[in-house]
Structures are given as C-alpha cells and as structure tokens.
Image (tube, rainbow, N blue to C red; front, top):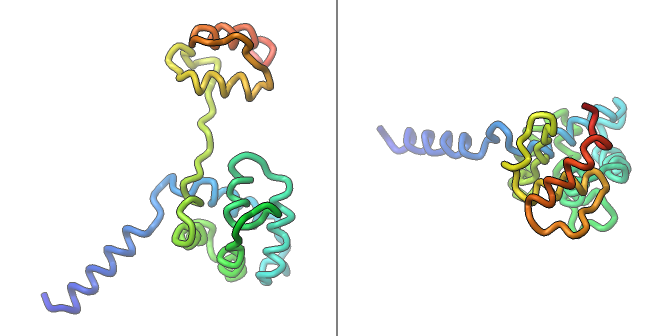
Length: 168
C-alpha cells in the first residue's frame, strides 16, 4: 500500500473511534431531543433564539438534565457556556446524537452523565443491593432512616415504608 492508502485508513479509524457508542451521552441525546421537540419552526432556524429558549427550558429541569444544562451554560449559576456549540448545529437540523458527539469534544463530562437505573421493588432482592442504593430508595421517598447503621436496618426501614410508597 502506498502512503495515501495508509493515511486514508488512519483517518477512517479515527472517525470510528470518535463516533458515539450505544448508551453514550444518553442524558445529552434525550434532553436535546426533548428540547428540540418543543421549539417552534421559526425558532429552530435562529441560534440566538435557540439559546434563549434553552435557558428557559433549563429553569424547569431537575437531576441529570439540570447538570447537563449547567455544563452547557443554560443556568444562571453555570461557570462556563458552550451554548453556541449546541445552538448552531441545532439550527442546521443536525440530529441530537451528532450534536452530542461535537459537545463531547468540548467537554467530556457531558457524555459521562447517566440516568440512574430504576429499581423495581416488586422483584428486587433488597439483600443484594448496596447500602448506597438502599439509602437512595429511602431518600427518593422523602423519608429518613434514623438510627440506621447496618444494611439490615435500611432493609427493615424499606420494608416498613413499602406499603405506603408502592402500589402492590
């Protein structure tokens, strides 16, 4: 093979490595899809309007989406802002996964965001969960576990609260 063939092969390998894999940037893709579906047709063409709408959209989001907004600069307390990296490609009708691929190059944290796995309390064996997950269940219910020290204490508290917080 000549030099140009090697160069072409090298460049194609780089493109494959940089492409998103299944499950990458799940928060980014889902949030951008949700956001773009709420935009009007005339807003979709103007990057400045998209940025203004995104800042408004970010005021009502929580958890992982809120963190995503923070990374992009959609919140007032955001330290940096790369909204232009999102709004321009969106105004060109670029798909969310390709926009997230571009954003990943600017800030890798954006694609490290993952949704928490939902725990099905009807089928899960609480004894097999980590204490961190047991605490999260109790916190998600808005309850506390006073005096809980060992794993069995957390399991007992969840069993007590299960009838109140789940539909069996």
